[in-house]
Amino acid sequence: MLAPVRRLLDAIPFDHHFARHLPGEDGPPTLPRQVHGACWSAVPPTPVAAPRLLAWSDALAETLGLASPDHPERSAAIAALLAGNRLLPGMKPVAACYGGHQFGQWAGQLGDGRAIVLGDLAAADGQRWELQLKGAGLTPYSRRADGRAVLRSSLREFVCSEAMHHLGVPTTRALALVGTGETVVRDMFYDGRAEAEPGAIVTRVAPSFVRFGNFEIFAARGDRERLRLLADYVIAQHFPEIDGADPQRYAQWFATVAQRTAVLMAHWLRVGFVHGVMNTDNLSILGLTIDYGPFGWLDVFDPAFTPNTTDREGRYAWAEQPAVAQWNLLRLADALAPLVSDTESLAAGVEAFGEQFAGEWRRQSLAKLGLLPASGQGEEMLVAELLGTLTMTEVDTTRFFRALMEVDPTAPLPADGLPPALLGSFYAAERLPARFIARLREWLAAYAARLAADGVDAVTRKTRMAAANPWIIPRNYLLQEAIDAASAGDLAPLATLMAAIRDPYTEREEYARFTARRPDWARHAPGCSALSCSS
Ligand code: AMP
Ligand code: MG
Image (cartoon, rainbow, N blue to C red):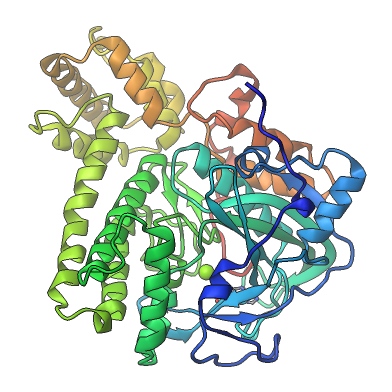
């Protein structure tokens, strides 16, 4: 079979479907203001001083049918394009208007304050993908901020978008990371010590960047007409399975959004991802992970963990995410209420989320143990009991489940203590509390009994576990190492990290060092366990 032709990015016919089909406005592009009656505002990216391509996702380029920028001249041309210094025919740069509930409060108009969609292109399979530059300059939605992004947050978003995709988690993608050659001033700790940092732009790619908040803004303003136009557009473009003429279509669509969000939440829990800012403006209508900011990964298993330093109460902690998603769905249901004759149908969708999440989590969490939700007897207790036990000492979440895979459940437990395979997942293996050891031993016995009762053989168990428990994730400290190196001009660690995350369920010797437990220096280091929104 012939390899499909890879096209150069600047030879691709672009469209701007969203802007062509929905009402927008062409007011002063960079004047911060309230924008009424528009889904978008036209705004060209602000050119940057010295764009330079720092990283490129070959995996996504392949999906889009794009040729890699493999020589310096091409790389420079692409950097100019993906910095917003150059536009192509067919593109129409726009920033979207949306609102949102932030930390439980209605925040009014937010909008793309630093993200600009250039347009969309078709992949070989016909799927259309929007290209969006994050950090591309001021828009009408920038409020008092600068429209820019720093290298550290952009690198994190670039790597993690692609990592999540390879982990099998629905997500927006990232095609490129471009350095701007300009600095951006940030007060990282909100303590008045602002510093100039290198600036960067991520090219984000998704079928759509529409969030719950795009609907909320029209509902809040009583703009039923725009609300309906946007809902009909999103259904027609992105939910072809829903009949656009069915009077029940809005409720059906909402139910689908709830279902996708439920699946997403189970994935986040499964891989140990904490989004960090689950405001309604950061929830995708397509059920994708979107807006990577102060996100983090569970190193030590702690259900109450959030990396976001501005979230003191832990509203968006790891274990809270499904409940927050449901609360956000309730806000979306409120926003869509003007479109339906009976709001009961929307309430049913919110209700169903609970069951859907429970079912999906049952499936995914049991897969982590190599079990199937077949008999439904006691398996969920087994998961809950294990997670409860793991909080009793410092366990590395990712390592523990891979290590458990290596424990032979049919072998007798050691006379005292734990199976040696597990020891590498503890932060202090030599000081494990006796109560913890006893409880985990009991659990292991119950687990072995369950596997035997369900007739799960060794090979099936291992295969299931290997597909549900990642071997590599872009740990917070690995991202920080890549950031530190890139800031000093060394892009090699970033490139190696990108290669390592491409096949995260397969153990490969050359990437073993990426599976190491969080080192001591990263325990409280900024960027590793604590992050702020200011990026
Ligand atoms: P976030 O919490 O990062 O999703 O951002 C919330 C809102 O603030 C969105 O409307 C963003 O576009 C806006 N925002 C965040 N950072 C900036 C920035 N540097 N310049 C302009 N707008 C920003
Ligand atoms: Mg956001």
